Image (cartoon, rainbow, N blue to C red; front, side, top):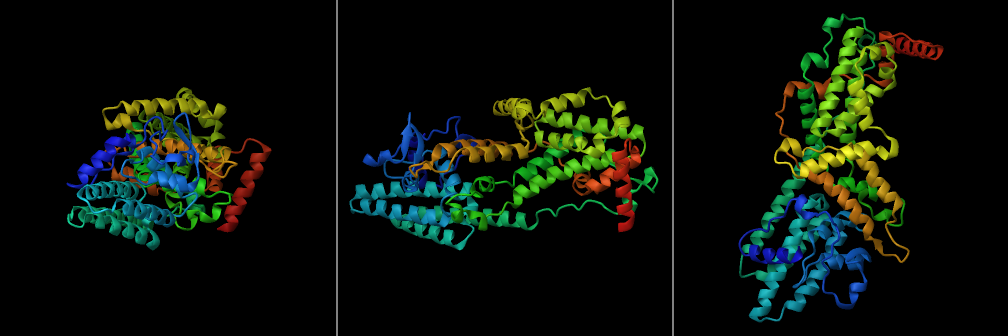
Length: 491
């Protein structure tokens, strides 16, 4: 894999900017990083087992990142190392070390003959390709002045390798411009990120003193389960598109280790993860609110069955996150306790959904369904069949579990790179799925309702639930009395 990349980088540098491949081609099914640099005796560090890189000192891993005349790192390695390096070293420090290695390589090639000049240009092309991979995949590594300064210094040195030809300078200029645009776009997203919807606690809104006919619900906006599932998928893909690999590495970098002081928690915040998690919680509470606010049992039964159908359509699409949010909403105590309502619901379809989300054996059924959706996505010809949206909380827990059961460093002090191969493979899958373009047309009216409709707090849900179906035992009666008194006193 590395050799064609080297040749392509050299050829394209004379004509245009090298193209970075999409993630799906960057990481194969085996993240082994088997291409080894020609480093003589230093091959004992890093350490390989059966041709696979498993560990190494930080210095050796950095050397393996930097191209030479006869070597270009495998893209799987570039992605995995740059992703995991932030756990051990700041990006600007890593850039500085890369720059130092570049100086040494450049000095070795500066002889003056035409042959050596050609080698210098070839080396420059490979460094440009590496920087392009880095700036496009992890643009936020360059959001501080120190990193940008180091990048400019490396770029200046590379430009000197081919001063007669202005192509290198143009390529670096375009790369820098693209980087600044990416940083600007991400900064704007963080500035306008959603404000958390505040649950409704107003007494007049919760207690059903108004006629039901004046109360707007989801069915008055969209009564087709498939269309609602498609709009939920649209929202999911939109939010997922703003989650970056370095966001996901926050799970690993917020750790109790000797390297904790080097983590980037002071630079990169988890705004995008929090916003996405908040969306899941809001959807669950919206489902519960829509059900509990309905006065008549027949209409409430219809609402429950409607959401069951929506969750089923989400499953068929491959939108497991919305499906889980809907099921979670219906399993909240204020909804689950509505026995008279549930007795009228045709629960066969709901039982199937719950079977898929059964938490036993580490959500084995869900993982089987997710694997099936992933396989369908790989061989799909249409965008509709490519959709895979995993249950985000479970995805995060999987990464966290990998982090907890494997140490970052081995007893000999070397970095446990085998661990980071596995984490990068998981993150790569997510990044591949998030790139799918949504095939569904946006319905502004439906999405506005889903994103802005009032949702009840847990307290308000219980009050609405008790008003729909009165308390059935002493415990519920006491709870109902306490809640109502609290609400009236607050008013």
